[in-house]
Length: 250
Image (tube, rainbow, N blue to C red; front, side):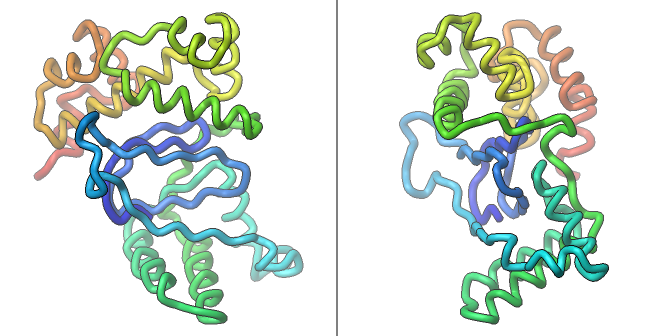
């Protein structure tokens, strides 16, 4: 659960902005990264995101329980968590309180608190699946570190033109090899990845900075307004003006 801060969340092949109060449930072997919005030269302790993270081994539930009728919904929840789940609506508000309580609990009380959270998640429809249906984690430990280097570089430089040659050099590959490598591990092309990062940033500018489409376009690294509008609609399924109207302040 994010207690403080905003930034970009990577879960599997999902890329989306995160904000204070969001709760995410990720299963095992699912690559995930929360990257704070920290402007160069303004990095202070206050700028970083803060959150509560709860780790547990699903063996704590016991295989017998998951096979019984009482545990089938919980088993289904754990299976869905392999693609990452965003908790929404009233359920998110309830779990926010439970997670904050969990921090101060000890012993059996803490186990019961965790089970209460999992039970609530297994009963609700307030869950949004994040990674795509075809996503398969093909990352090894070395790959994860390499992909994190790529993510970090793009997050710092997406406002400028980024060429495959730069990333190829950064990862000690040829441009062709890097392009193929990225597509296999990210489940999308590198250009699609950069566009998603730029559009995610543009969404924040439209809502939080109250920019118009043209301002958000050039502040997010796009070279032409026509390409920005095309990419924006492809990724958000809305025009910039429709996005502002739907998600902006009332």
